[in-house]
Amino acid sequence: MGKLIQFPTGKEIKSKKSEEELIEEVVNELVEISQHIFDVIDDEIDAISKHDLNLLNGIDLRNGEARESRDAYVIVNMIYAMMARYIGVEHSLHKELDTLFVKIKAIQNEIDNDTT
Image 1: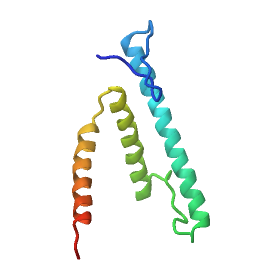
Image 2: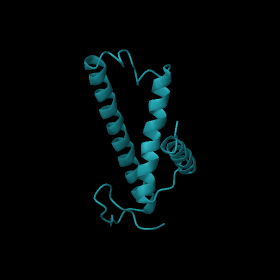
Image 3: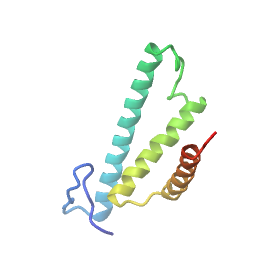
């Protein structure tokens, strides 16, 4: 395995810990960061729902039965996979992220080239 890099500083992690211990530590930190980002998103959506025409009133990103909650779960895992890729940790979502990138770019190109 290559060097482990501290997120978000970019500094190399040097330690007497085993490679497995280091990976577990980094993975746990990424999980915490991803959860924090979700908490920020949830708080912001809650604030928006109270102030902007109640457009999102009633949205519940923490209710596993709600579709938007399932979407939020996927997004948080995509954020985790993005950070894991940055520091060089493989994740099973990387291939799906690459595919989604190509699809989204194609959609954007269609919109940009729409002459109607």
